[in-house]
Image 1 (spheres, rainbow, N blue to C red):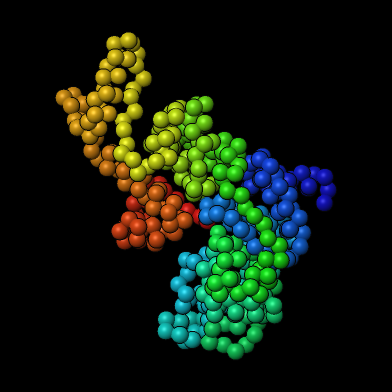
Image 2: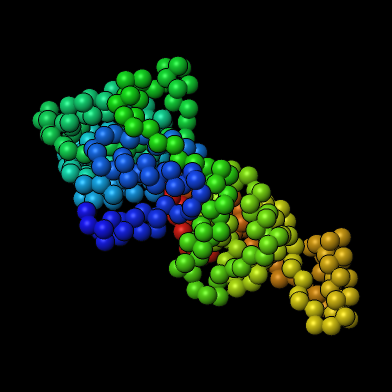
Length: 354
C-alpha cells in the first residue's frame, strides 16, 4: 500500500473506532494486524462497548472489504429459526416455509459474517456451526445438497464463555474454532478520556441548535460516571440531552439528571437578568424543591410536556436494559412492539445497535 493509501486507511479506522486512550490505540493496532488474515476472531467485552463496530472495522481493513458484511444477533433470533437464518431453507421444509430462502452464510459468501452474542446459541446449533466452520460447507434446511461457502466468521459475546464451557453450556471445541484470535473490547469506564471525542462524534450529524455544550463541572460528572451501558449508554445520553436541552450549556446538575432518567425531572431555572430576578429564581427553586409537581398561581405546569419527558426517558432506559432489542424493551415497558416503534418515531429515537 502506498503512503497515501496507508494514511487514508488509518484515517478511516480512526473515524470508526473513536478515541485516543491507550486501550483504544491498542485495539486499533490489533484490528490492523487481525484484518490481514482470514482467521476467525472472537470479540469479548461488555454489552454496549461497540463490538459490532470492531467487527465491521476488521472487515473494512481486510482483503474482504467491499464484499458482503452481515451482523446477526444470535440471542435475538428464536431458537427454532436460527438454523434457517444461518443456513437457509427449501420451500416446504417446515410449516411457514412458503419459498426457498438463502441463509446468511450463503448471502455472505466471499465476505464476513458477524455472529453477536454467540454464547446464547443453543447447544445443538453449536454442533452444526462447528461443522460448517471446519468443512466450509452448508446444507439448507430440508435439503441434502452441500454448498461450499467462503465466509470469514467474527463472533462476539459479553458472557464468560470459560464458565459456560465448565457448565456444559458451550462447546469447548467451538470456542477454540471461533477464537483463533481473541480481542478484548474495552469498557467505556476503562477509557473515560475518550468521552469528549465520542460526544463530538455523536453530535457530528446533529443540527447546530440540537448540540449541547458541557462546562467543566459537567464533564467531571461524565468522567466519574460508571457507564454500565458503555458507549451505547453515552450515545443515548447525548441524544437525550439534545432532545431535552438542545443548544444549551449543561452543568453538573443537568448531567446528573440526564444520567439518572428515572428520577423525577425538575424544571431548570431561567437565567436571571437582575438581582430581583436572582431572588425570584431562588424562591422558585425552593418552591419547586418542596413541591416539584404542584402548580402555583402564575406558574402553570405543562403537563403534556412533563408526561412526554418521562415517557421519552423511560423508553431510553428500557432500550439500554434491553441492549437495543425493541421487542425486549417493549416487554419491559408492557407495551406492544408496534406501539413502542410508534413512540420511538414520535420522539425521533433510533433503533439501537449492539
